[in-house]
Amino acid sequence: MGNGIARGMTAPALHMAGVFQIGGKQLFGPVDLSFPAAGWSCVLGPSGAGKSTILRLLLDLETGGTFHGTVTASDGAPLAERVAMMAQSDLLMPWLPVRENVVLGARLRGEAPDMARADKLIARVGLGDHASKKPAALSGGMRQRVALARTLMEDRPIVLLDEPFSALDASTRADMQELAAEVLKDKTVVLVTHDPAEAARLGRKIFVMEGGAVNVWPTPDTPPIRAINAPETLACQSALLDHLRGHVA
Amino acid sequence: MKRLDVLWATLIGIAIWQAIVWITQAPHFILPSPSRVAQAAWSSQALIAEHALVTATEVILGLIIGTALGAITAIQLALSETTRRLFLPILVFTQAVPVFALAPILTLWFGYGIASKIVMAVIIIYFPVTSAFHDGLMRQPPGTFDLAKSMGAGKWRTLRHIQIPAALPALGSGLRLAAVYAPIGAVIGEWVGASRGLGYLMLLANGRAKIDLMFAALITLAVFAVLLHQLIGILVRRLEAYAAGR
Image (tube, rainbow over all chains, first blue to last red; front, side, top):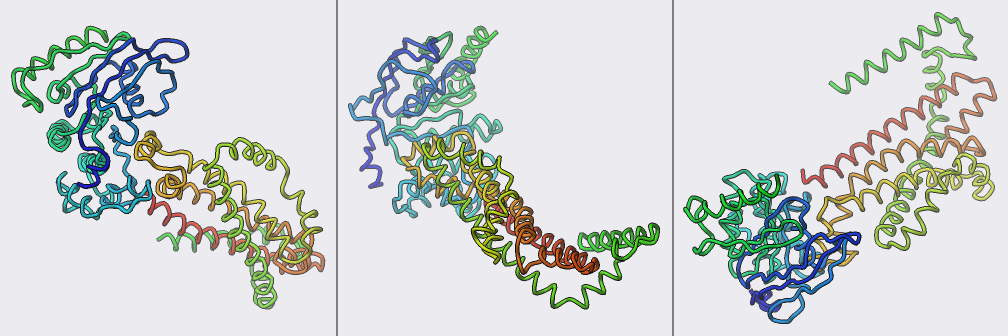
């Protein structure tokens, strides 16, 4: 993993403070968010609250609005080129076999891809026998595993996940959560999700966005990833759901 | 099964044609019967083949050059926003000029040979190819450009590794249109001024009241256009299958 050392494997904590406006109107803020280093932060909230905007700000992508504030890493280094993303849609290139999809980043940067490492990562997400197949020959869950391997291949210390498991069936989703938790355990992960159960399982820190504010929600005392049926997971999930329903209604 | 359908449709078409000739009793210099046309086609096969070869050359060269120019323009437009802002309105404006009206000017500039017909075919297919391919290059699944940017991709590599392969079916749609338009462009060019080609042969036959030969040339042109369309169809289906990963 020499490549990773070059990009800085130590995952920093992230800090975001400021106000976000669209067309002069405030979407959220003032916020003061701390995302813990080498751990999962989950961002929950109703549609349109600005969850994905937080990820776009961390990625320095176009948001359609203006952010008055700062986004910093605890090590003081800029975030650019240290962030990888994974979205709800797998965004695999249908004409490329799995292995080529995994090394897409290297191709796009004009670097020689490390095929041996790609094969290792493909095997790690359980697709060792499928490396030469095209995405059309894979199930939705398998395609999301390829997207996860592609994200890992980027070997960035910060990983942003925008509802990556929401289109999967319940059992595949639970499997993917466990796999992602294992392979991303050394990274600073920010996960945007609609699913209180997912946040309750995976979050070391949980943020709830509502009415322009972003509040920290108490997480269970046990470390993630938590069992789906553990009493503390279920209690956290149910309290979150009640809270969200109260605000959505 | 499909080939049988084509055969049946052709036979039915010929039967209807023959029936009209019988019912209307039209003189052969207005509407020749299928058998008369077949006879003319057989007796003038060398002549028709010679002219057909000229038209085919014009159409195929026009298709190749027009598609290449259209694809290069689309890529340029996709690469540079400035080019897009300046060039797109001009491109749309040029479409307001009826291309057929240009035929006499093109003959004046490029002569009576095949060059003016190739230019005519190029002009007529340039816009559909450019427009279809450019739309395909710019219309990517949501999040694609964000992913490429997060991976540190430049414009050219995003285009080469993501946009162009994804836009091949769109280029195919442009090619399908081009296959229909290119023979029209070539034949109109031949009508305006030429000494060879199926369009020229039709005018010549008409002037000499050889209507059966005129019909034979017309049918040859139609068969060529259909074959070209089929051939392009095979190519386009391959492009579509590649882009879909089948």
